[in-house]
Each structure stands twice: as structure tokens, then as C-alpha cells.
Image (cartoon, rainbow, N blue to C red; front, side):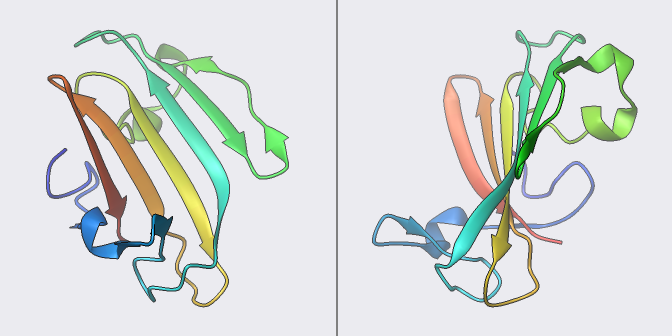
Length: 116
């Protein structure tokens, strides 16, 4: 993963926010965060066709081949070449809605926070 999202938003270092094997909000450092949305991007290496699946708090959305959705969704995949995962959280303490990104690239798995 690069040091910025594909949208140009900077990333916080994940390792700086991990304590006691618990995730903390990257904005306020509170550990009271809840998963509200999971986005899964699945594709073979460097393929254009990609499957996009969304499970959102209290509901599931249909899995859609990327070819049928707009470029904004395609550009959300944290991996430029393979699978990616975005987990959106709600923080009980602040207004931040941090997004945890997991990406696979050349045999490595990267994990980081997206910052707005």
C-alpha cells in the first residue's frame, strides 16, 4: 500500500495505534470502536474484473462484479493489484469514522488506517 489512499487521503501508521491487541481509534486513541461496514475486493493478480461485496451494519448488500459499478468503487480497493478489505468503524468518543485497510501485494499483507 502506498502512503496515501487512491483518493489522496493520508494514512496513519497502524502500528502506532495498536495496544494490548486491541484497535484504537486513530483520531482520539479510544478503544471503544465498532465495526459498521466491511467492503471486500476480490480479484486475481492484475485482472480488471473484480468482485465487490459490502456487508453494512444490520444489512448485507449484493455482491457486484466491478465492471457493473462506477470508478469510485473500483478506486477504493486498497490493493492496486489483488485483494483488499476495508472495515469502517464508529467511535463512541469522537466524530471520526476510521477505516481500516488490509491489502495484499506481492506476497505481503499490509494493514493501515485511512484518515479523512
